[in-house]
Length: 240
Length: 216
Image 1 (cartoon, each protein chain N blue to C red):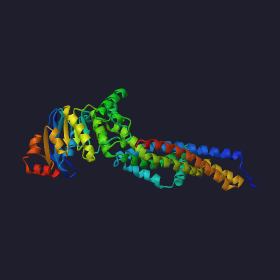
Image 2 (image 1 turned 90 degrees about the horizontal axis):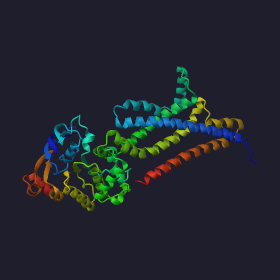
Image 3 (image 1 turned 90 degrees about the vertical axis):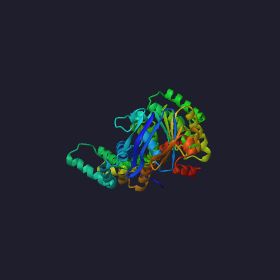
């Protein structure tokens, strides 16, 4: 369970997240939608401690993320994150990209890590690209590789930060399909996304962020289909 | 029609000098690379704390090498340091190379996108693991051409050590010139030896770079 309680986050004088509270239960898929600058991506970075927070608390399975005694490297093993700019390690092959963390962080043998990596890459449809370097892959393939890389750590949670925003339109589908597959497997997921229809399809709950706050939250049918707030309706209209 | 006083013994003398040049280059580059790597990482990762280091290294980058040789050699005599001229040459050239290499390493490390480091940390890699498996391999590809340039530059700068009494390639050729009075021929031969030594280094480097580029 991820418990976000009254989190404030600012960059210098610029307050980005201004008191967000949100709980994500095990097995739940929560989508966060909202305009740019509404604090949704920043919140995601705070969940696994990539960004410090100024106030409030975030607990993952009861562990306080922003506590100086928390072993963040250990905590991050169970929180996978997929970024907008897929972030493939360009000097490593696809297989090595996925094997790196299981080997160095989990201490798996080369053999075990390879087996695991091949399994994950097959899962996302990249079994024929194992020895390829990321530079030779399309954006969609690189993003699927990034998903496999995160999954190889057997995380309990997956965070997606606008995973399809930087992709060519014709490549968005393959990545969304991979994410949908994960959701159907019962993975606990938090998605920051602009793919409203996708969010409506896969989410258990949708949160609309505005000005660093949760403006509206509820079932997808309610928030997307029949929003209470005028701002939510206006936003949905603008992205359609 | 064309006769020369240049004997096979002279050639051997030149090659001996070339060997000293190679040794000087090797030791000063070894010293410069190790120190430069350490300093460069400090400069890139702790820019504020390592600022005084940058000031010191700036001195070594800015003062002509010849002055550094003569000053350090005199200093050695003044404080009674009992080390050979060869060691003085290695140390001065090494520090000089370190000052340059520091900036090359810094640029390499800073060229690794912040988002990639963030991605590796998000997988649970520690700061040091990220440095070892992501930052250093990627920075190496960026810094390598600069390092190679430095090696070639230092190899030629070793010629300056003749002013503190070491007989390397250039000093050896001058000795011969004094005797046989054929400066053009001797300098051409010495230049050719420098050229061949540089060519080998450059070719080895180019081969390594090609192998990296095939992956990108």
